[in-house]
Image (cartoon, rainbow, N blue to C red; front, side):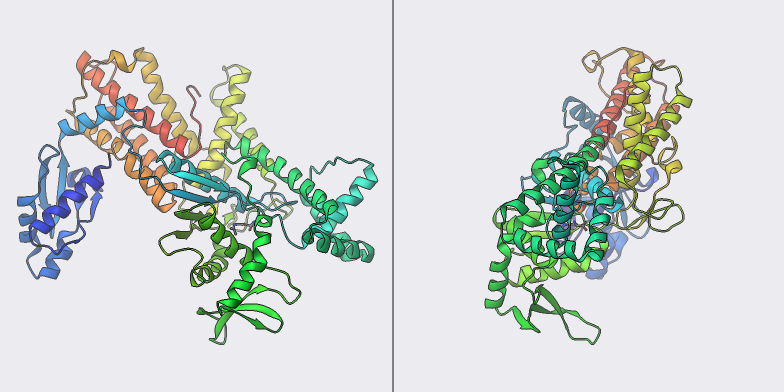
Length: 576
Ligand code: ARG
């Protein structure tokens, strides 16, 4: 149950009954401090101002008609006209029982929508770089959350599998195959292969000629070129899949919907935009001039959708892609997890999409942008030699570091278990470090921080789970054995439970805003509340009824942390 939404509704009704204009915002928020209750309604002041009445007096009127019978045990006015709401302990306890009995922990499903999520999107014959890592991790967490809420999610891996670079890549692949005399190929180092292709293209005239010829042939549907192209895509995606699997990212080969997929749509799009009067010829190219964007001279910016030589552009593809997602996939919402430097590109493409009427206004096209991943020195994340960091190397290093840590912490575990723990902690650390930051800002990649057992980190959260779960092991009980109800007597119990029941609010916020850090902050706060509770309220030594009630709170905490981490794509361990 979303308690915030429930109370917001109730306060909205009361506002109206007290004379506020219909639709006045109740602005109910979680209270920042226990002394302000569990929730706070902040909407009264704004309404009173509009009505020209005294806000505290108006707040009293609202409270007089506010119906929170059985839900709140105390409602009071604070400061200039805030309404503080203290939830009833009995009511909270009932909600706890409900959540415990439900494998969804009381989180309701939403009305189902078809949601397309564009994420990861690496480029063929290139290593996945750190930007793709961010998109992959953040996108996958949001995908899991949306699916959990009951939506039909289409994972769209918009890989860069088209463009003139394929001429040189095919020509080089051909050369490699001829030299090794094999039909199959070994391209373990894609980045080097790409660089080599580029070098040959720049320095060898014969090679360049062949490459240009292959581009034309590939675009013309030539079978040999198509086959070579497919090999390049395959090798790349096999390597990427290995990274996805290691990271427990839910993408598979079936989710690939690369740029090439839209190729056949492009001539039609250009023709249609011309017919609609949106595209005009300018110096041989097809251009859409947008009043919304001005160039340096203050004139409408021209967005090229077809070059003079007939070639199409990244923007043309994204126009077709948005159209496809609405028309063919039936999207109600499309989320794009792409770094912030591509914002203008997307806005231009979508402005054209809307003008052409390809996607109706009520279908949202959302750019969920993120900043750059930086090294400890505050500069773009690179290897010591200044090159791109291979994702696989990064994950290897994470595992090595985690293994040392686990060895130091728990030398007595057997080798296989230690290895498993190290792997789980390592992948979680890399993911959580990214997920826990507000995605729109740049973030500093720092091994020591992400592997720390203190602070808002994966090891801390995983350890918190293990600790809570171990209380159960020591009690040696199951939920069915706990026949006494949840009873709240202590302040710390109430604080813990109130936070536990905010899980749904966190899940829904992540789904709505595409901000997984909201879940991380929530879980971190929850773990903190549990620690304070555990310090103040002994569990195993308490008398039976109290012990059972507290064990239930502990169980709900463990389940909530596990499910929350699971929605982020992070595994938990029973022992670490
Ligand atoms: N492949 C692109 C890149 O590496 C990202 C594609 C994002 N998706 C899209 N629909 N444009 O930058």
